Image (cartoon, rainbow, N blue to C red):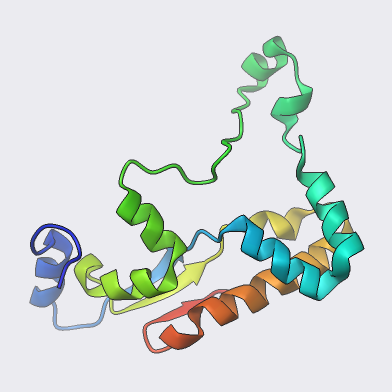
Length: 155
C-alpha cells in the first residue's frame, strides 16, 4: 500500500508487466554522523579527526574568489547533502526500512543501491580513503542486511 495518497502511477505500471523490475541505479543517503562512527571503528580516533578536518572547506568554492567561481562555474556545496521538497522521498533515501516499504509503490522488485559517500574513493589521503571505503561498506551492509531479498548495497 502506498505511503502517500492513493495508488502510484509507478505501481499501476508495474502491475501491467509480466517481468520483474530491477533498479540498477538506486541511491541511499547516509546520515553523516553515523558514517563517522563507523569510520572511528575502522580507522580509530586519530584518523577520524584527520578525516573531519579534511572536509572543512574542501570544496574549490571555499578557496576561490567571486570571479574565479563565476569563470569556473563552481557551485557552493550545500550544508545538507540532499535537500528535498518532498521530505518523504528524502527520508526514503535515508532509511532502508522505509525504502523497502515503498519499493512496491515505486514499482521496483529489486534495487541495487549506491552510497552517497562515493567521494571516499577520491579522497587524497590513502589511509583515509581505504578506511573510509571499508567503513561505508560495513555501514551499508549493516543498514541493508534485513532487506537482502529486495535490495543490495553496491560496494
